[in-house]
Image (cartoon, rainbow, N blue to C red):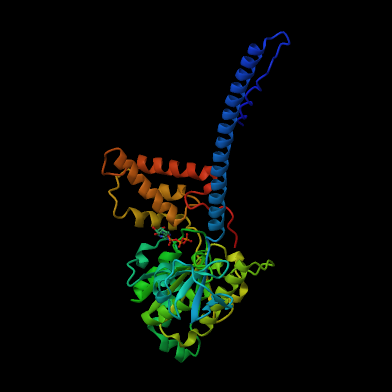
Length: 412
Ligand SMILES: Nc1ncnc2c1ncn2[C@@H]1O[C@H](COP(=O)(O)OP(=O)(O)OP(=O)(O)O)[C@@H](O)[C@H]1O
């Protein structure tokens, strides 16, 4: 900490009784001059201190403003209901609370109409007018008109492929069979298992095979990125699907919106609950929806709320595990089929060695081996490249993150 400079020394007046009047006068004059100097210096210091004080007050004001901005940085979403002379009536999404409020001075009242979606701050003042919902939809969902993944691209999970085809393809292609037999087709398929085992691929391949569009939505995005919008986006998702049939809806990380209820009553939990209830109600009205099939995926089966597993909802559960040795061999085949691989590469032996590798880990291993060849200026990938890649990925594993996709706390 810097210390303030010491005060100037107080001038001392030393009058000798022996002094003549002239000497006294001269000593007094000198003393007076020194006092004037000291006074001038003190004045200067006071001025400096005032300036510094003003600077600090300014800094504090800026910090306060920044703090205020940080506090109000997250906005809530609402819809404009009515513009009145007293202000604007908005309805907040999520809790449907109606509020009479005002606009931020930066907004122009002529740009706002009833029905607009707006962002409001903690004091409900309208901060911005949001783009219309199709933009929000586009951000939240990945829509693929015709996915190119085929069943041949998926290795090691043949039984799971068969089950998914039965549950999704059959009802789309032969709905009359279900009618004749007199049973309802499975409503939703839930794929569960470790990350990177091909769940997304499987859903895309089914869409491809049935000439259906593919719409993917990530559960975590629904509740983390679009706070207050989850239930609405679920509604939008099914509306969009109805416009695109035949369609496969894929909800990844469904655990984010369908976890077991916790005891805490935070607004975040309430939001997740609302999103899940919307999803359940959409699925319950599913019978009349025609050519829409729904597949969800999770790495955390143990966390799921049983409500979503009831008949008529996700009633076909398919486990997608990490591949066994034959599966790994098949996945190695798939991922090396377009690679320039040297004769000394022994994929059988490699498949044996890649214990605990997921399909995604194997895909990374082959890419990594190719990178070693390129780094060495070669276009043929050798056994040594695969060994080096294996060693590199094993080191990642030793550092505690799993071969690649990291998977330590998985239970189901
Ligand atoms: N069974 C598999 N056969 C061939 N490649 C696979 C397989 N599983 C995963 N892969 C490779 O890993 C990539 C990622 O797989 P995918 O996204 O389907 O896994 P996921 O199970 O959906 O993972 P997550 O749970 O992390 O979303 C695929 O694009 C593919 O290259």
